[in-house]
Length: 346
Ligand SMILES: C[S@@+](CC[C@H](N)C(=O)[O-])C[C@H]1O[C@@H](n2cnc3c(N)ncnc32)[C@H](O)[C@@H]1O
Image (cartoon, rainbow, N blue to C red):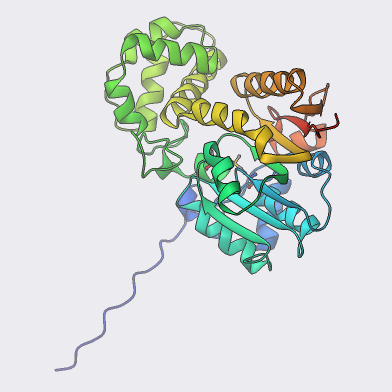
């Protein structure tokens, strides 16, 4: 009797020309093979699945005044868009240390940059919270670096992948952790949080005007999916304006995400450490995406100028051009601030 080998599973057929589900966008997930498709997606103002378009790239590179041979840190490596731009300026004699807490995306980004010729010698990818940037620098025998780049918040790979649980537009487990190996998922956090704490989080992390009533309605409840949570938020408020209802959902998701990832604790520690991580004359550039982040960066830079730690910062915040906003709507809320470390003689 002859035994037939098992047949490999068939790939699912797609009904239409353009797959809707994140996992089915197989061409977008394979940019090396489908460059034309990727270019079309970007030209239509969208971010290809599994990718991230770097924001204010030229402006960040200018702000850091990069030169061949410099040594620095990209504190939020993400998809490596800013890192690539930086490496093209500083390699091969320079060195970039790229940090990220995302255990899923970090190895992919390291492999992508290695495939472009940036690996040991000029680039090191490290799984680390940027709150510990000073230790990372000291552990490499450096007293300071020439530049530090930080592009705060989540990457498009995290937002767009339903299984990461960040999006209120697609169904997924209510998780929202950038590092799913640590801490509580958003679902567990909400089940445990008190009304008073949730109200503070909504108020402090997203300036939510209806913080009190939303906290009373939702704190301590268990939500199985992102869509269930989004619906519960809509039902917890009395608003006739559809757009305002959706803005509320967006704000609540943002506040819970910041809480679950302890983003402000990490950012405050990073900003405290930053001056001693930079060499005299060294520069830092930080991209923020909402008022809670921007306020912290601005206040820290201003305090550093007052205390003589920094010699200069930009007066006018740098924002994306109309063209960049059209091509990448995610750049619309971005603000870039830079600062220069004072030298002893300043
Ligand atoms: C906006 S993305 C960066 C995108 C990147 N500049 C690029 O061009 O691809 C932010 C990244 O920072 C990471 N991140 C957020 N908080 C972090 C922290 N405290 N320490 C290290 N990485 C962090 C996220 O996991 C995410 O990958």
